[in-house]
Every structure is written in structure tokens, then in C-alpha cells.
Amino acid sequence: MFKLLKRTLQRGPFTEPLAEETEASGIRRLTHRPPPWGRSMGLRTVDAGSCNGCELEIQALLNPVYDVERWGFRFTASPRHADVLLVTGPATVNMTEALQRAHDAAPNPKWVVAAGDCALHGGPFKESPACQGGIHAVLPVDVAIPGCPPTPEALCQGLLALLERDQKE
Ligand code: SF4
Image 1 (cartoon, protein in one colour):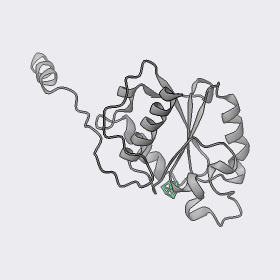
Image 2 (cartoon, protein in one colour):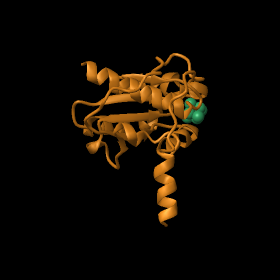
Image 3 (cartoon, helix red, strand yellow):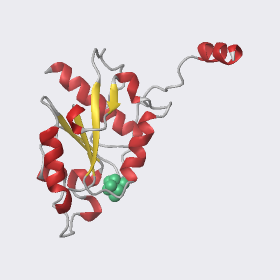
Image 4 (cartoon, rainbow, N blue to C red):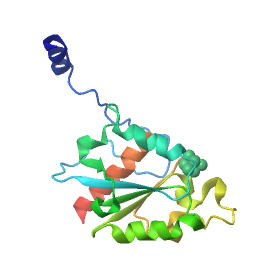
């Protein structure tokens, strides 16, 4: 037990710095350390009709490699406790009301992050009559993260861009 503890302390955190290059295009690159952040930011994921590919990448944000909690992000069980709605999938007709209600339930100030090509413009589902296109058709979008699905690096960069923007405001 003590050997393991000693080895862990000597090795330091397993988290890795963000790569300078990312596959995702259109995202401002944050290669420097993120600004110090004195608060936490609650994230509530809302699946507006995705294929679940984006959710698999979002799950990776909590693993020891990406570990978004080091920057103060935490996932909440309810939009009532959230600062950010992290929306995946196209704006499907069936989810429009749920999306609006989740947005209404989140306290101000709040932000909307559209994650994935579907959330940006409907992706492969944009021609479907069950889909209204990107999330912007229903909610104001603050940060858009492209990719199908977006990589965990791209998701981190988008969330950090939101932190930086919030600090400037
Ligand atoms: S962007 Fe790609 S992975 Fe994400 S929901 Fe759409 S089709 Fe699935």
C-alpha cells in the first residue's frame, strides 16, 4: 500500500497537456496553460437526437488522461445545477421541447455548447423531416465544437475557450 502511494506521489498526475495540434478545425487553439479558475462549472449533457458517438467521447473527459475536473468542470444530474448545457446531436423535432425546458431550467448566467457536427448543422441527419438542423435552431449557441464525433482534445479546447471567454466578460 505504502509502496503504491510512494510511487504515485513520485510519478505525479497522469493527466497530459493538451496537444498543440488538434484534428478539429475551427477551434481556437489554447496551447498555453488555462487561466486560473476560482470556481467550478457545472456541465449538463443533453442528447437532442445523437447517435451516441459524441457521448462516448464526452465520457472520456472524465478519464485520467483528459480529467476535465482539474479545470473545475463537473457533470451535474440536472440542468438546474448546471452552468453549461453540453448539447449533442441534431435538433430533432421530438426533443425540441425538452431542449427548451432544460435551457429554461438552468440558472443564469448559462451557456450552450454545441458538440459535434450534428449539433452544429444537423450532420448526416440534416435532410430528415424529424430534424430541424443544428442546435442554433432552438437555442443560442455560445461555443461550437466541430467533429464527428469531436475528439476529447477538441471538447477540452472548446470548454477551455468558454472559460477564457467567461473570464474576459
Ligand atoms: S456528430 Fe457524428 S458522432 Fe456525433 S451524434 Fe452526429 S453522427 Fe453521431
